[in-house]
Amino acid sequence: MRRALVLLVTAVLAMGCASDYAKGQYALRQGHYAEAEGYFMRTLIEDPRRIDALVGLGVSQYKKGEIDLAIETLEKAVAARPKDPNGQLYLGLAYLKKNDPARAAEHLAALRGLPIDPRLAEQVDRALEVIRKEPLTEPVRNLLASNLDTAADLAREAAEARRDAQLAFPPPYMGYPYFGSPFYGYPFGSPYTPCVLVMRGGQPFCI
Image 1 (cartoon, rainbow, N blue to C red):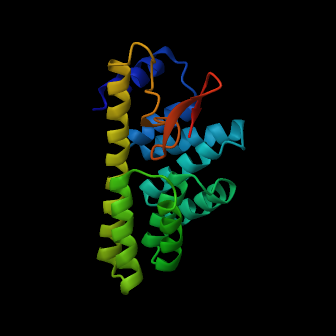
Image 2 (cartoon, helix red, strand yellow):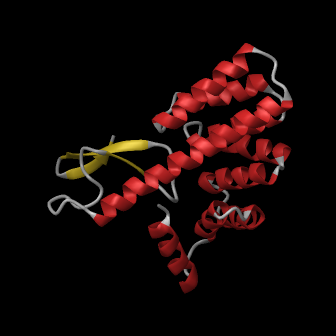
């Protein structure tokens, strides 16, 4: 499922021409969270306007268990880009870990209002139902956070599989991606937001 992406990123890294942001994404994907954090921080030093790197930094901090730092970082990212699904998801998860269900529900509801993978949307709906119903024990909060994190990973992997299939078997008359069918901009963008390519005035548009 990840073979094409791993080969591509490995080749880029081997050539030494990958950006710090791309290296951070790759390290994050491989579970090297401290390394990813360093790459995203370097990206932000070079360009503080990189909200994608700010989100990556916050996700890395969350994965490392640095919940307070993750909240501080992701609050800045979401304030600058409220429609970023990664930012809303992991800020919600960080508040869930911090035992602030009201803020967690706020950001998960914001995520639910974005065009996300249907299976992830189902998990968000279930989590919101539990969060809003009753006081949450720490084991329940951890389980909800883990389930949503896993659902997000599965949604990303499914998106990659679709992308890899389109790369392997492109329509000879259209190229990649298929016009009129959904695809997910990833790995170095937002992994959960689908769009449909259509032609307008002879130019492709993502709607």
